[in-house]
Image (cartoon, rainbow, N blue to C red; front, side, top):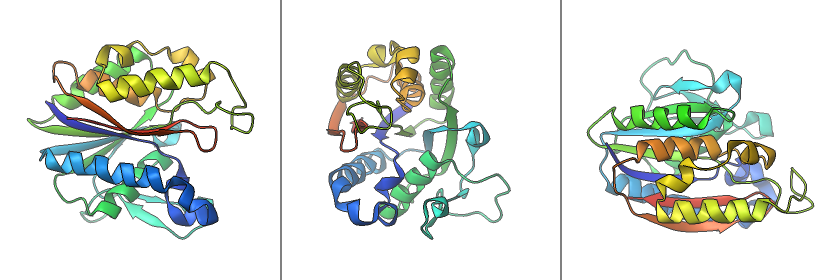
Length: 237
């Protein structure tokens, strides 16, 4: 059963060496993520599952100890998803899970076993929801760390250019995450999310499936779009 969840953005810029001189611009987001992970630790889960968007090669499960890297962004920063347990033959973590691993290392997570799941952004809502239900049934006390960004179309300089639909979409996502509104997350329009380049849509709907019947309360800790991309941090407990 799901006992707690944290929702965090997953831009590589959260990792200060990647952001370099721009690192202070996301200090507020980093602080909020640290607070959100504290909520997960306080829930004392038996299992933590980290869910994040992934390209085809990174989709599927990633075991504890799986490795990731930010060397592709020009910095010698390597991460591991939780404490290592010998050799891990699977491929590298997708970027979203590497960011999550960095956050967990930064906060010294050692409270429960960890597993990762890379989710394809096109995954249909019903499959996302069923995936969440399956995760929640994995242990008596399950926690989720849900990675993903909102729209990438908030300004003219945003990766997806300016789309007038982006701000209302992000506002509804922020409201739903802050209110732990399962029904609203289930109802998110997958096609609109794709058009707005909202990488978190599928992962938020996994959360919706996992949270069915859990009766959790929500809190929105951070919401901003410093680069024209919506970044949100929320907790459910």
